[in-house]
Amino acid sequence: MSKPQLSVVIASCVGDPYISRCLRSLEGQRDERSEFIVVDRAGGKVAETIGRDFPWAKLIRRPEGQSVPDLRRHGLEASEAEYVAVIEEHCVAAENWIEIALRCIEQHPTAVGGVVDDSGYDRLMDWAVYFTEYNSYMPPVERGITYDLCTANCIYRRDLLLESLPEEGSGYWEAVVNHRLIEAGHELRTEPDLVIRHTGPFTFFYYLGQRFLFSRAFGGIRRSAVSTWYRLAYIFLAPLLVPLLWLRTTKRVIAKGHRIDRYLLATPVLIPINCIYVLGEWIGYLVGPGNSLSRIE
Image 1: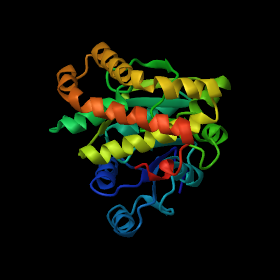
Image 2 (image 1 turned 60 degrees about the horizontal axis):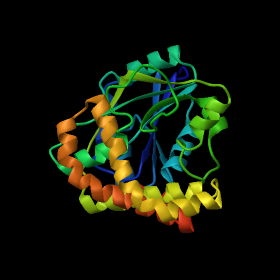
Image 3 (image 1 turned 60 degrees about the vertical axis):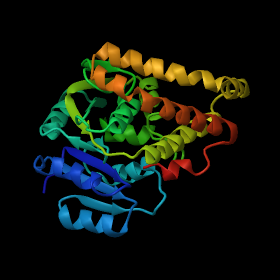
C-alpha cells in the first residue's frame, strides 16, 4: 500500500452529533491519497460509535482531560503523510475539501489556512458563536500571504509542524506554531477555495462556560510571557475591552460584508459572550490557567 499524501487529524471531545457529522462530510472524499485519524478523549459510547460507523478512520484513544492541542499532537505523531490537515469536529468539510487540500500542498509547501463559513443557523446563539469564534476566517478571504491560520481548517507540512509545536501541555498551536514558522522564514498562505462550515447547536450557558475556559487558558498561558506591568494594566483596564472587542468584530463583519443582518440580530448575545471572555482572560492573567485547557471542548 502506497504512503498517503495527506493525513487528516480530528480531535474528538464532544461526541455526536458533531464528530459523526464531520466524518460523514469526509467519507465520500477519501481515496488512497489520504488517511484519517480521530484522536478521542470522550471514550465510552463515543469511541465505540466512531469505531463502528467509521472503520476507515484510524481511532486513537486518549485519557479524559487531555487538551485539544495535545490530542492533535498525538494525531500528528501517528500520521504517515508528508502533509497534515486539521479540521475541527464542530465543522463539516465542503464536498471538494480533500481535493482542494491536495491541490494546496502542491502549490504551497509550508502551511495553508482556509475559510470557515456558516451553516445558515436557525438560532441567534449559533450565529453569536460563529461571529465570536471565526470572524477572522469567515468569507470572503483573499488568496495570498497571511500571518494567522485557523486551526479549525488548516494544512501544515508535517516535519515543520513537529519542529514548531509547543511543549506538550503548554497550550494552543495558534499562539506558537505560526509565529515560529514565520520567524524561520516560512510563508503562511490563505486559500479561499478550502472551505469548511461551522455547525451547531450550542446552548447559551454551555458556550459561556467554554468561552470562559478558553480565555482563561489564553490569559494564563500568556501570563508568563508578558511583563508584570502588562498584566497589571490588563487587570485594571479590562472593562474597557468589552466594547473594544465588539467594535473589532463589527469592523471585520462590515468589511467582509458577511451576514451583517444576522450579526446585528446576534449583538445582544455577543455582549455577555464578550464580558465572559474578558473575565476569563482577567482571571488567567491574575492567577494562571488552572485546569481550563483540559476542559475546553
